[in-house]
Image 1 (tube, helix red, strand yellow):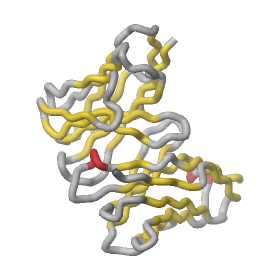
Image 2 (spheres, rainbow over the protein chains, first blue to last red):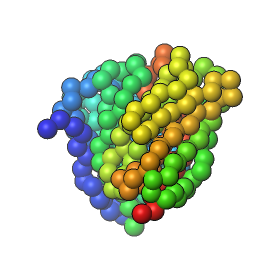
Image 3 (cartoon, each protein chain N blue to C red):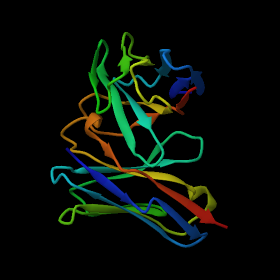
Length: 114
Length: 114
């Protein structure tokens, strides 16, 4: 069953801790993306990767880091430098980097900082 | 950069009636306009998109219209059903670039009243 899998679905973190959100896809897509979703706001792009071993900052990259060591995987680390990390995080993929087309989303990870 | 405004933020309609959600964009170079539907607790999914070489596109009960001159586009849902209840996001980008240039609206929560 092809798709994107995010884990964990819910995550609680104490202030000052780094956390890593997992995103795995078996769609053979080149491009992968991380979005942040806050109430009353649209999806905002954190980081994206068009190809393995390469990634670029999106609109709100401060306090986040990513890696793309495998085509299937694009983990997001929310660092202690992120000032307001409580949010819903969505990972997505698309067929090819550099082209506009359908985004396939995961089911999201909700991070709460205590 | 692109700015997308979406209205209304919430919309309630009687089952069987029509629903209309409107978006405006600022960048005249934008030529790709997708709509995503996010049911409660589920992932966003593409439901319809339009490119600027057409003014209207239909898919069963949903349609999207585009007015390039006025820089606005709308989602129309006819004969609404309970399963249409969801948050709908519009987006805009220039298809000459990748999905990383996609700018989302703030979302409309549509509730269908049985």
